Image (cartoon, helix red, strand yellow):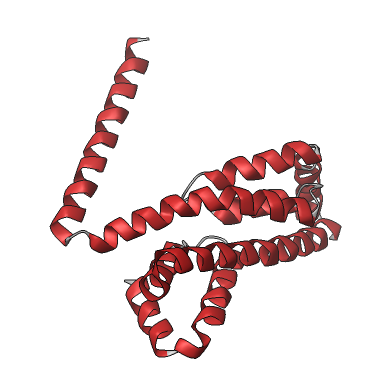
Length: 191
């Protein structure tokens, strides 16, 4: 539903559609819990698979940078506060920041490779570590490219499928998931 509204907005604002899409991606990344696939869908509908995908990668990368900087500043301020919450947060952040810079790089890369992974959690974790901005940008962008390729393929398929086909695939995925959960619970019960 959101992608239809956004597609209409970007279509009607053709002259500023690219910066508008980038700004929306940045806002979504800073908020940290909103999914960005509807922006990818709108980008593909307006600019095509290649340019829409590239625009989504650029937007997600810029959004991750903005979120990283803001999260780090916010964490630094919160940790600096006196009181029980500030002290508790500082002890948790000290434990998280014990991860080496190299390990943090590969953790961000690995989490970004997973499509539909909440980027706010990954960015917050990286902001709480000793990871430098340039290492975060590199690992985040490298990991986001394959994940966005999967997202672009999924969105493209969903846009081309008739509603009945989409619902049939969704039903099959749900049934397979239920079957896997059932088998997993039986295995635990037997043990």
